[in-house]
Amino acid sequence: MGDDMDIGGASSSAVEDFLKETSLYLAPDPEIMENHGLEPRTAYEDQCIAKANDPVRLEIVRERILAGVNESFEMLENMGAAPGAKWGDCVSAVYTASGDLSLASSGGVVIFCNLVQYPIKFINKYWAGDATVGIKEGDVFIVNDARYGQAHNTDQSMMMPVFHDGRIVAWAGATVHEGENGAIEPGGMPSLAEQIWDEGLKMSPFKVAENYKLRRDLVTFLQNSVREPKLQYADMKVKMYVCRRIETRIHEAIAEYGVEAVVAALRMNLEDTDAEVRRRLSEWPDGTTRHAWWTDGTLRENVQIKINLALTKKGDELTFDYRGSSPEFTNRSNNSLDITVKGMLAQLFLTFIWPDIPRNQGVLAPMKFVFDNPSVLKPAFGTPNAQSMMTVFTAWSAGQVCAMKFLYSNPKKYTRVLAPWFNMINTFLFGGLTQHGEMVGNVCADINGMGGGALADRDGEHGCAPIFATMSDIGEQEFIEEEMPFIQIVSKKMMRDNQGFGRQRGGMGYQMVLAMRDSPAFGFMLTAMGAKFPNIPGLFGGYGCPTYPLSRVSGVDVFDILVKDPGSFRYSIEELMNERPFK
Image (cartoon, rainbow, N blue to C red):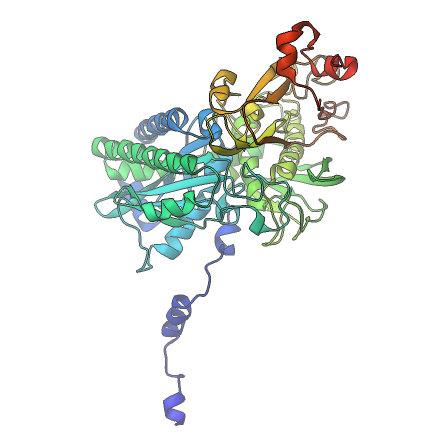
């Protein structure tokens, strides 16, 4: 019997295969999630670079593919159904076969595509060799769970492998801030969430289309899980066709320049970016800059949450040390994952410090990150993070202040020193029944009008762009009114003394006043900090922006007033609250 029970003769590889095949649950892989750097060159990439290494030709190939990516971004904006798609809270991108972000669209949200590297690497590691899944030409994968690689669960990404002669040579990706995701509150960013199970859809990376066709059984499941089934289906189709357009442009580049040139261009774009960032960092003086700032609540109660940063530059590397920041909130949704902090800081360098650097993840390769674990910026696995913006935006601002101090100290600059950009999404989540009888839940596009910090020789901008996106828009109110049962009676009006003290502005430049109409059930929820403590500081001390209290007028039919006594209405929050003109 002893011989029958003996497994000592089994090879170690057989045991490893058995354990691999019997995994109970493929959770996010720490080996993938902790690595924000570049994957090692593959043997095939080495072969391609050996055959195609003329830098001028590779630059032409890169620009050719980037033109296709930008074309796909315009498709995403023009065809998308979600407010985030229509007004620029989206992005499209190309990744290497290994999953590294190589080319992001010139417009859009860099953090989105920077995070998609993680689900692609998960797919490569776990699904490529799985007989029940696999990766074939025409397959499309989807993800929205932040723990596998998204900013928060309201964002949805679709990824498609690009094949040539049976080999994956690249990945195409498209991401949209979709909004509604079936969470405990409409709109996808529930302040009420006290556990991860309150945050709505939790899609780990899985195959949702085969042979370029969405699987209707899976689509129906996803539609059945959210409040806006039409939105879910429409934007899945849009993202898939955006990926197909990128695939087409890559195939055209291969036909014209050869597959070796395309693979080499995607890889060298990353390595060239890494090398250039290291060269520029080496020009900065060695040392440490420090900054601490606070956010003033959890969206449910007032509390001072500390974000602490020591930024150290040594040689050609930067270290972001966020130790000393507040502990995690185990039952509040304003925690941020560390990958989200990293992705936001990529946006900082690619937009506000070195906007001439190609938009890819190579910019972060020379950088290291240190967090307390767990903390509000690196919470435990089961901690909700649906409102991660409430802490990650403050972490971004601390990074901007520290980095700008280094930039100020360097005689050679590639852009000008910039005062802190306004960092908060002062707008509303909404949800309920529309005038068309459809259930909706989403966010207003006013988040994209953040005020811009001043330069040494120029005032700041009242309303310019969000810290997380380029070439985005605040939305056309007339279009919004066609779909939603509310009107912005005061829409994007500049507010006196709202930008900070002195000539150099630093806050939220405009105000808005809205009211619901033509719906039996519709509501709003504020999603912003900064009513008790300013969102941003000055650069070298001094004043930051003012605070922004939420104001509300109840028990008044404003539309009746506009018909019967239009002269009594006041078109600013200051006048409405101070004069109280309605009887």
